[in-house]
Length: 301
Image 1 (cartoon, rainbow, N blue to C red):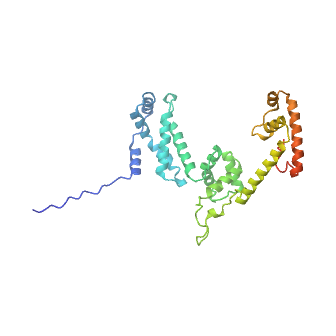
Image 2: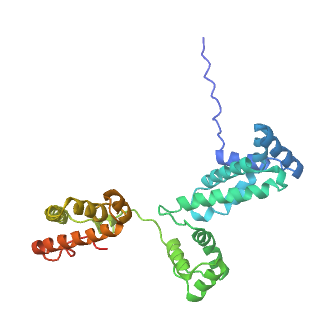
Image 3: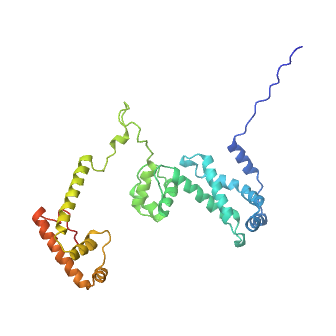
């Protein structure tokens, strides 16, 4: 009996998910004002998830349109769209139909804000814009430079810098710093800085921490100062020691009034005892180390 050859199935043709999303967004029907209001009300008052889905699906094209304006920042377009969708969902959650504002108008702000925040967080490993002025500079500097036909990639001329600063109501120094920041690129610290591949950029970083020898010397000096101060304090009366410790050696200085209440004396008397105790400490430490204030032994006012 002859065996028939196995039937070959046609290769599966998977559709690019990004293209599928674009097609779905463009095919979604536009909403009239009343339809939009009814859907938003159904979601807001009844928690109708189907209404929410219809409402947000109708404005996916708005997300794509806004995300396309941020393509030139070098970030993946699907990621920009995803962040825009987050903004769209936030708009749907916060929208108040009774205010009689079109949902598309309200959602535009949330979509743009979400995408801008994503760009600022991911354009560079260094946080670029933290204040409102810096964000305005980041997203408008290129546009303004193109408007005045400033094609240089680095520093602006004094005239152009003044124009941008006035247009965005920021300082000229801020404009110059942002222009330099936008002209720079992130560089790996492990990248070689010579043609032969020897040495890395991280080798040029300066370590501001004290070296081991300095740490040992500082520790020894601290122990010695503590020993001298302990010997000086032992020459004071108990009341004098208490006042000096509470007023000069603690992290938080106790007020004269509180110490006076604690010791049963006036705050003026506390001040006098403190002054006398400091004179005794300084006199003893001067005999031992020379200048106690220079040695960091007597806390000054």
